[in-house]
Length: 93
Image (cartoon, rainbow, N blue to C red):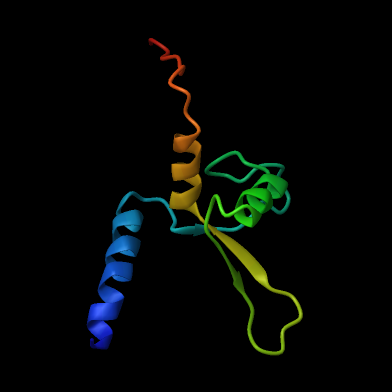
């Protein structure tokens, strides 16, 4: 298997996510109480990632003591969708 075959699914996933106009990865809220795209708090994002409900990555270079945590937006939105109980109300305009 060559390098192109290995990257193709990942590239396709990133491109399909990016076509929607939404970022692929988001950072937890820093100064606000809620993450911009989902409305979830920093604590909730870390809880969901810790439980394996959403994808997250820690970005740290060798020698760094602190890392940057990012969360996969698609996995967050998929998790929210999976919590649907079918009782959503539609608002008529």
